[in-house]
Amino acid sequence: MRAISANIERDLRSLMREQLGRIDRPGWRRFFLALLGLAVSFFLALYATALHDSGRYGISATVAALSLLLAGIVAVKAVPYLARRTALERWILRIEYEFTREGGIYFGIIVVITVAALNTGNNLLFMILACLLAGILVSGVVSQIVLTGLELDLELPEHLFAGLPTTLRLTLRNLKWAFPSFSISAADRPSAKSLQEGDVRPTVSGQETRRILQRPFYTAYLGRRSRTTAQVDVTFPHRGRYAQEGLRVSTGFPFGLLRKSRDVRLHREVLVLPNVQPTEEFYEILPLISGEVESHHKGRGHDLYAIRDYRQTDTARHVDWKASAKLQQLKVREFTREDERRVALVFDTRLPAGDDHTLERFEKAVTFCACLAWHFYEISAQMRFISETLETPMASAGAVVYPVLESLALVRPVFASGLPASSSLPVASVGNILARLPSTPGTFNIILTFLPRGSIPTSLWATSYVVFGDEL
Image 1 (cartoon, rainbow, N blue to C red):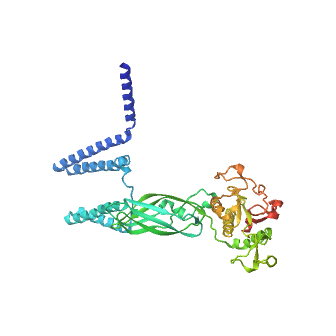
Image 2: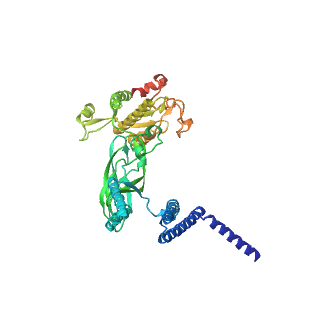
Image 3: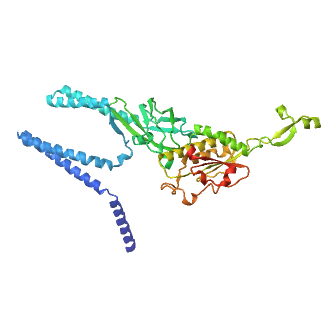
């Protein structure tokens, strides 16, 4: 029995220590100090009233001022501190307020009428002041209702390309059962302004993340339990990763005196692919590349594959007249397909240390490589892609073009002195990919590199076309 009693007593003590450890002692200390301050302030107010009744007006005014000062200290120091530590902040909306021009004029009028009412004691001025203050209260309550129960959704296309305009679908829902919402605008948070303006460069380091929504969305009326959808035109200026962690909804309803705003959660992330629209450099170099590829695959589109029976869909120029005369039946020749060309697209990301002009040429090389990959996709060629971060097997360009573009969207330069400090690639993976380039029969290599011309292995010149970064 004694052992059981000791165990129970020990458990009770540990439970009491645990409960006492959870007590917010600074908060309770501030709470009791606030009560003491208010009690003293109340006592001083009563004492000031007694002094005023006894005709000691000077001392009464001094004691009343001390009472008001003590109450003000409690209101400024204790009340906000205790409010931040209460559980009410879990369900109360965090709304930010911003004065409008009309609101500034309105509050200026309130100050003037307040001074006039205190100096004259006119009851009509006090009534007007009460109406003006009631307007502020009504505005706060109505705007609180308008901003509650709102939900946002952002729909993005499957593939996005840098520099090409695209349309996003932004949906705003009002989940309230009884009240509509008026004059609602949704925009990116002000802290992301610098990211929207494009004063950072995610294209090289690949680490910075830009915001998706760059233009505000506005709706004048949104009924209860309803939704509205808007088409938002967006153009992403750079390749890379874009994300949206939330939007700020705001309203000036009903009087426009204050602009009330609150944050709404919204998590979206998208990868913007490089621009695949042909550039001037692409139009200049593509005929040279096409000529080299055709020369390497010379005759493959005209090699005889078989002789078969004539079909009504066949053209007369493919009729084999000798075989037809010999067999007394129309025969046609069948050739190998011209789209059986096999190309290996090699992107060498090694970059000599340089200035912003060097990084700009690297971006042009990425765009040029993306244009080439898209070109081979459009002509249904067999393509293989090789870089420091991705190596695909030889397959139809349609099967590998999007993995290639996704890799190019996040590619970063490997400087001549080694990897940049922010890179996540292992050092062992950075080597001369040209020296490791496999020699595959029937495959033509297209190499994009920033290395000097004399550093290209001589064994590659017979089966390769090299595009140097200085040419872009």
